[in-house]
Length: 111
Image 1 (cartoon, rainbow, N blue to C red):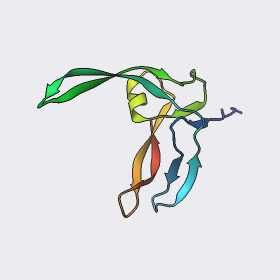
Image 2 (image 1 turned 90 degrees about the vertical axis):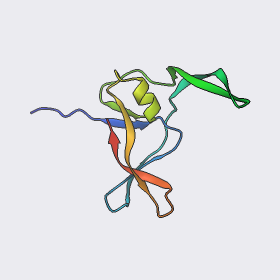
Image 3 (image 1 turned 135 degrees about the horizontal axis):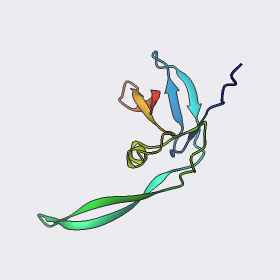
């Protein structure tokens, strides 16, 4: 008999991640356990009509735990995009909105 490995999802965004079913009902809330951000530096690149223009340059991830087999981390899309070699990163996907257009959750986690 093959033993199944336990998988864990940890939230490394600054807010709870709410998972909804197709009817919009909340089926799970994943509370934050930490925070991963990319180091950001703003560089002035010029001026348009007297207003400074800038570019944000992103660097290393801060707060990112080492890869651990069976553990998946929910992070922002920016962090996931910056780290394409990390197969353990997930992002909220299929956003669910209320009648006013406010995000209330998501239907899945994107890999």
